[in-house]
Amino acid sequence: MYINDDVKYIGVNDKQIDLFESLYPAPNGMAYNSYVVLDEKIAVMDTMDRFFIDEWYEKLEMALNGRKPDYLIVHHMEPDHSAGIKYFADKYPDAVIVSNKQSFPMMKGFFGDDFADRRIEVADGSELSLGKYTLKFVTAPMVHWPEVIMTYVPEMKLVFSADAFGKFGTLDVEDNWVDEARRYFFSIVGKFGVQTAKLLGKIEGLPIETICSLHGPVLKENISYYVSLYKTWANYDYEEDGICICYCSVYGHTKAAVEKLADNLKKEGRKVSIYDLARSDVFTVLADAFKYSHLLLASPTYYGEPFPFMGSFIQRLKERTYKKRKVYLVENGSWMPNAANRMKVALDGLDIELCEKVSTIRGAATEDITIEW
Ligand code: FEO
Image (cartoon, rainbow, N blue to C red; front, side, top):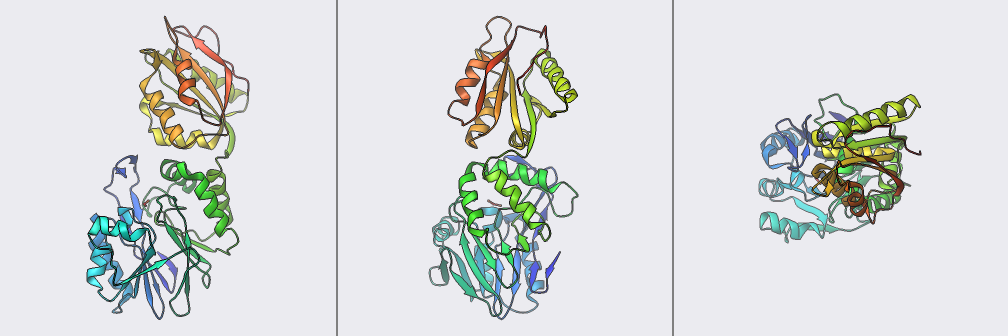
């Protein structure tokens, strides 16, 4: 991948991975990005996941073309990017490790070495000159670990953005950036919207023409579009007026009821997505719940509680401080419907507009569910 004459891509496509971070499905694999900035001094931007260090090193050596790196810039200590730090340090004993001071105890934790005799600690606003290029460091705490930094190169109007602006998927698959970036954001960074918004405030005034994330493609066009989407997500604003309908159904009656509602809403011209929580990836559903302005949760009563998949979904929403949405509840119970009461308790504390009217089904729906938009 060509970025410019002085920034080389040395990342790797992981096509073997099933669950990123052992949790999030990665059907199109994952890209772990790493870069080299070539100047009078050479800076390597992050290392690699443990399974791909050899492949990464080969690419690094090709990019170096016989030269030796002066600096390793560590933007983030999560092991999908940091696993090769010790390997790098051993291969290039004269190179200096550059990172936020919070990173070095983590290096000690992972590698038993905090590189005390060959490190530079940087803080917000620190600069490091490579020659014609300057690395300006921006701290990005909790986006999405506490030690994260980004690097802005003003001479190139380029930012190395750590995990921000990343997505699922290898770089050689054709998919929709916004869908996979949204799923990535709300799966991994979504709990830290406030911190992400602060970071966006810090970089807002910088002229940016290129974003080099640790995952996903290098962004070179429509930068304002990507930044604006990130603002929407960080502020928990919705992208589209529409509804995400999430249901559980044991014998199909709750399913039939909400499918009928979905059909009716579509006839009214509403945008609708609908998911069976027992048969959908919870994080894909979560991303859609954040995409739309309205959410409907429909569940049978099971041991006096919502169906287990519903309980788990609400917990995922709470972890990410779901807010600014109108939420409707539908329950089913043939002898003692109680799912809505328990869903209300589970949703308590979220800054949502919970519709007071609950639709209760006693077995099969005898009339259409309606909602007040
Ligand atoms: Fe891609 Fe937070 O590591």
